[in-house]
Length: 530
Image (cartoon, rainbow, N blue to C red; front, side):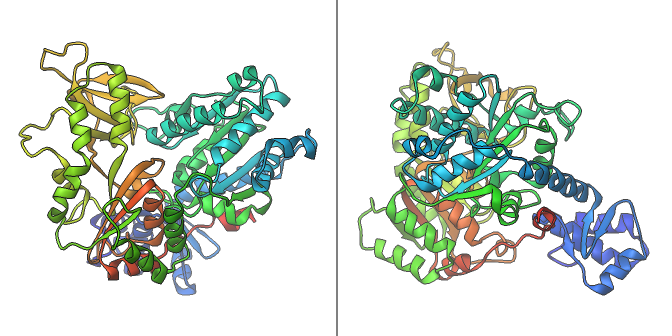
């Protein structure tokens, strides 16, 4: 068995092609590619001949690209609908002088003009470039122009939704000198996950809303669009009214979605008339910005130089580099950074205390490239928990939901903190508190859907989150399992989760390999959009 191919790849090939080794090898390759995030594979002339000689409803050969049928349908349907939206436009109802008064940044003004006139707008940019502030101004202008329009705000995960909601509230508070209070009040502030918005159905990949039962909203704003995979984006766009406006926000340089596709970057490459990239950073630490830029440019020499310069500074340096042989060598460092959190856990008495505890919890986060292994998620979750813990549930245990569960209203990425029941403090009862749409919800631990401890999280899961200080655990050497995971997109995504401080755990050689290793996903979406 090819070590790069899984048992599932082999079983799938055996099911479809039990007596054709050439065809079986191609199907194994396609299955493996799908698990790695590709939506298709490119075939040479000989492979194309094999597929044409063995037609099946299970796969589609489109030019030189081979798809499983479902993903071909997702991609072609999405491309058709996005092209229609991209082509639709309306005249700008504001003059240049009015827009100049609202925007100091010319690219933000260009983004506003795009969103006001086009039915599809892609607004990209790194952290701190003002995407949220820009979109709040856009929403205010749209409300002025279309008084009866309905709006929705969404993000792929609960954490991303909560952060967008906080950012919108902060932006509205800073715009009181530009817009009247009653207009700002009309800007929506509730942000939903995409699954909540579309109406997830238990035990099925289908949603309540689709082309025959579309969403009622006239304008949909979606943040962290780079996280949205091909299947979900296809279902989302399919659920919009034909004349609805779609505004996608995100960072095209971040990791692509966990599942197949690289929709935001494909759209950005193909739809030049529907995109604006914001470039001026307003709230991002300059040293972290330099590090992220060097990673994005695959400038390994500069990345190492920025890290080495930090070695002579104290522990509060903006950038830190730790090269250790075992994760356990970081135990003291990790325990120190969670000391304030556990001290605060002891004094929680009411909802206000829990809100404050969530803020403290987000001051420090361990981000890992892998789930298992010496420098994986499990190892760091063990190192972070209190030393005397003997039970699965204890005060202060953070958990992350890892599967959508409409019956409880908890979704993949939602974070909860296990604490004594504030309404029965002497009962010994523990509850897990979730901060959802700025409202606390409490569950007994036994009611939670599938979850995991969340002192540490994978870098993939961290998308849409922001922390004061991140420790990025890459390890000291690559192996066959981690080589394809540790990429410059992964590192860039991890670094840009930090607001004030970054600590890298990596050897020089691994860091260099990581920066030089870029993701290239196979997809036909950009080709279809041009």
